[in-house]
Every structure is written in structure tokens, then in C-alpha cells.
Amino acid sequence: MAVTLWIEDGRNTPLVNSGGRPHALIAAFAERHVALTLDMAEALAELEGADAPAEVRLWGAGFRLAGEAVGQARTLGATRFWQASVPSFMTTVAEPLLRKAMQRCGAVALPGQTPLGASPTGNWQTSYRAQLDALLLDMDGMGQGFWAEAALRLYGSALHTVQARRTGPTHFEPEPLLVRLLFENEPILPEAARLSRRLKRVRNKSQRKRSGARPKEGGVTGLRSSTSLEDLNDALMSELVLPPPMLADRILHEGLLVRHRPPYRQPRRDVLMITLADRREARDRDAAAIIKAAWADAALRLQILLAQIGLEKSDLVWSEIGKAGHSAAVLRVETQDFPSGLDPLLMEGAVRRMRLFRSDLMPGLVDTLSSVQGDVPDAEEPAAVVWSGMAKAALRQIAMTGHREPRSSLHATQAPRPMDYARRIALVTFPSSGPLADQARGDAASVRSNLSAALRTTLEEDFDIIGFIPPEGAMSRGAVFSLAGSLIPGGSVDLAIDDDLPAGEAVGRLVGAMSAEIISAVLEAINAR
Image 1 (tube, rainbow, N blue to C red):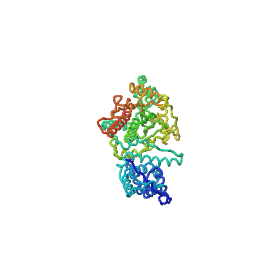
Image 2: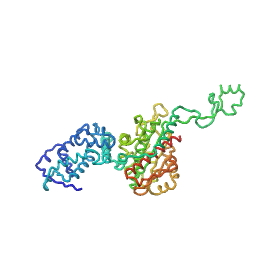
Image 3: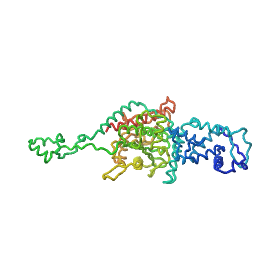
Image 4: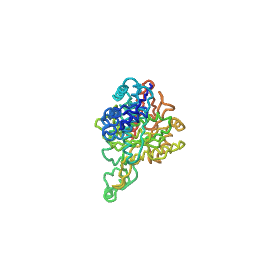
């Protein structure tokens, strides 16, 4: 719908010549061909100096709607922290709202230095304000996706502004599709009963693990001398043929030769799940966003599940390489508090969005400009080099979270290493096409074996590997995602976008199914311990 812009003669009117912040805003927006009435400009100027932007008349509703879209209706914009996001609010919220209101209004007037025609008849300002009020009434006018992206932009802008005081200026640019998949799309998990059965097994196993040390559980590693009667059952048969007096003397003074059965090594930490994604190819952008959204949903639920079964010392890491470089995000279990009675498998709606927005994943997970140190490999680099670089970025991000583990001395500490974790799982996304993709579809086991060897040089330990193979070509109905690995029932599973469902529900079921497979694989890894 076209918008008629009228240029009013402002040479001799207070609209242009009065000065002050409201009039400067009117002129600045007019340069962008956006109309701003004096009342709107005054409210926008109030926003710049407010300690709680959400409480400012008119525009404060924008903060509240953005908060509602991510489950933060009473939090977003309610403190001084959000004042740093007001410049971003001007361009990411106010301007799109005004342009939409202009489109609905049909005709508005801008201040200028030369009259280029008669002003529209009627009071356009009243209609213009009414259209803006309607857009700020609820999320329907602009859509939940718009408001969710606005919330992430405001959060990222405020956070980066605060950090820039220490590290210098930074920029935040969220990925729109990923934001909508995370906050507008609702994942639908299938077969919750199957997951619950596996969770029950894991919970029982965790209780046994925490019940105390079992010295006889380990395998035989050699022979040793012992004077303890508790080791008599492990004594060599040749030691027991001695006469009773000599046997008693050996037990009291020299000791008997017994099988050495040390207890299982108790790792310092519990579960490490690292996901490696190569997102440099534009053709895989949509499929990679779906995989990333599924991983985020699974990680959010696993964070609660692992805490509930006593595996708090776990870390869930996403590491990727894109055009801007390496980036990684870590979701730690032990740093979060969870309300009692919360069932992560049934978590949905505002509760899920709230926990996701408040998690350590945001806003970095959706930031396309977020990067950590590390060179970007050339497109011709072998896949092993690319995987190794992403693994190193993941380890650096774990170290940057500030967690330290005690080492040999009482005061020496060090960032966690892969060897510190009892269970290690690596999720790897393969490209949708090319020699590696063809090999993965034909012989996924050999690809995982090569990948395991490549990662062992960087991560120093073996990992249970799960491969994601996205569909070839553009995303469409019927597109199939494949997951392959020893932790997947049957070795592999194909997940398709259902042709018979509405687009939103079909994507929700796909993301939910993929999330459930990730959760199931992690629980299976714990059960196999």
C-alpha cells in the first residue's frame, strides 16, 4: 500500500526552528521520510532520560510488548540497565512502528523548507496517532516474531553498550529466522513417555552413583600385597595353600598377594555435550537454523533434567564457524536455579520462552557478529581442520565462563578439560551437499570414525559422535533431516517436515522431534556408563 508524503512549509513555524530534543527528533526522522508528531517526539525524548523505559507513556508499551514476546513482560525495560538500549529502540522498534502506521494512515506530512503542495485535508495527525496506538496495543499488529526480535536487539544493545565501556565498541545483529524459530515457533516433543522411561533409568543410576564408593567394581589391573582381611577374597590361590600358622604370619607381617582392583575413577565433572556446526555456506542457512533451534530447546530442557538427577557439573556447548569467524555459547547446569516441580519435558509457552531468554545462551546464540578469537579457515581447508578449530573455540568458551577445577595442589586451579567429564558427546552438522555429505549418507560410520580421530587430537578424549545431515537443496515440505550415531536407536533416524500439516505446526513438530532425539541420546549416553 502506497503512502502519500506531503511536505509542509516549516520555515517560519516552531516545528523546525524551535530547537530542543523533540524538534531535533522530528527533523531526524523526517530525513528518513518518517513522520513524527510533536506529541510522539516529546514521548520519545522522555524515553531517552527515563530510568525505567517501560514506564514512559506511549513508547513504554513497546518495551512491554517486546518483553511479553520472550516471557519477560514485567522485566524488560523496567530498570536503568535498559536505558542503554534506547538508541536501538529508535531504529529497531519506533521506526518500523511509525512506517507501519504511515502505511495504514495513507497520507502524512513532513516538515520541510519549501512547500511542494497543499497539505492533505482533515486531521492526519489524529488518524496517525490512532494507528500507532493500535500497533502498541498488542502483538498482533506487528507479529510475535517482530517483538521477539526487538527484545533480543534491545537486550543485545544494552549488554554490548555496558561491555563496551571495558572492551570497546561492539555490534549486535541477531539472526531473524533463528529468533523466530526460538521464540515464535513452539516445539512439539513426541513420545514424552519414552523419554520419561529413559529418564527414570538415568535417575536410578544416578542415585546408585552417589550412594558411595565401591572398591571392588573396578577391573583387575595387576597384583599387590595386602594385610587387610577385606582383600582375602582377592588373594591368589597359591597364597591360600599355606598352612594356617604361616598364612596368619603372612597376613600380619608380610601381606598376601591379591588382585589389584582399583575403584572406578570418579570424574570431576559429569556430562559434556559439544555441538560443532559449519555455517559458512549460504545454501545451508535455513537447515542450520532449524538444527540450532532444536539444539537450544534440547539444551534448555537438559539443563533442568541433568540438575534433577544430580549431574549438576555438566556443560552444553554450541560452537560454530560462519563468515564472521568462530563463535561459541555455553549453557552450564550448576549456575542455574530451578523451581521445584518443573517438568522440562512439558515446558512450553511463556515459561519456555522466559527460561530461554534468561539463560546464558542469550543473546550471544542468535548474534551473527559474535565471535571469539581464532582464524577463519579457507574454504579449501580439510574438514578435520575446520572441526578442530570449532572444538578449540568450544574449549576456549568453557574456559571463559570462569569455572575452575582444583588440580594437584590445594590452590592450583584450571579450566575443565574433556578428560574431566564422565560422559562426552559430540554433535556435528555435516554440509548438505558435496563429497563429505555423500560419504556421510552412504557410510556414516566411517565418517564418524574419521571425525573421532580428528577431534581426539584437539579434545584429547574419545567422544560419542552424532551426525546431523541436513536435506539437499532448498528447504521445503517433505525435506528430510538425518541423524546418525551409536546413541541413536537403530543407528540412524530420518525426520521430515510433514506435508499434511500447516507450515508452523510442521516446523514445530520437526524441531520438537529433533530436540527429543538429542535429549534421548544424552540420556542413553548416561545409561551406558
